[in-house]
Image 1 (tube, one colour):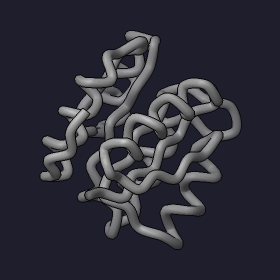
Image 2: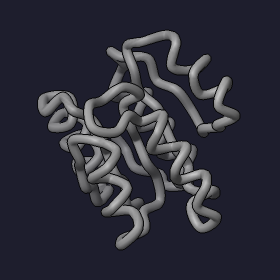
Image 3: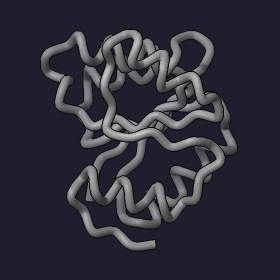
Length: 125
């Protein structure tokens, strides 16, 4: 199974996503903002990043930008989750690419299927 970092300032969202992913056999670390996640990812690599687009301290957009500047992190698959439709546009305008977008609220089965596709794992619901 995969090591996954979940970044979101909504504690309930993080808990639900973390529960679904750990139940599927993944190892999950969670962070409240992009700055905390960036520090963690520098020290501990992961197989997948799931980040909210907009957060205080450092947004998911900025987190992705900084990771893509770091040559060692450009291959890290990223899923951006957001209730805001303009996040995709913000990412494109900055020349950032991510593996997938999930508009909040989203179905957990869709999340798990996306995680399986991106990590090559065959976790179940």
